[in-house]
Length: 156
Image (cartoon, rainbow, N blue to C red; front, side):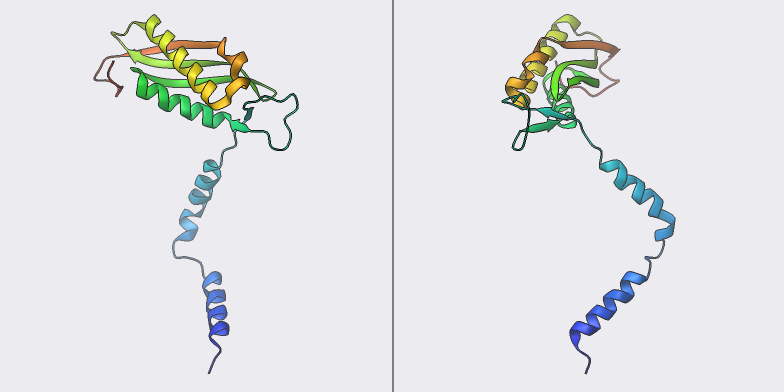
């Protein structure tokens, strides 16, 4: 009788050597999707902001900050962020610019002020004291206006 471990090892070797039917046709697309999914982010120093962040320093990537800002702004305000640009210098957030699409009948100056305050709160929640330089430099730019039927937005 054949040893079960040897039989399983031989079966595994044969299966690994046999390509999956149709794999050649989709392999490039699958590999490209996997490579695209692993995007790198730029680190931001979170509180407390040490002069020289070393082992044990808390870092938050720019991707986390952008996605959190996008999600919170969409939920709280009648707008859709279209671009969130971060000014980062040596791991410190120095400022941010948020471009939005807003509803046609919205008071844009009030909305921009509310968005800036919300963004400041989100940045402080994520980065703590290290966010202080950025809080004075939050710009909100309205790049487009839409009517209610054109874009799903939270109620005003």
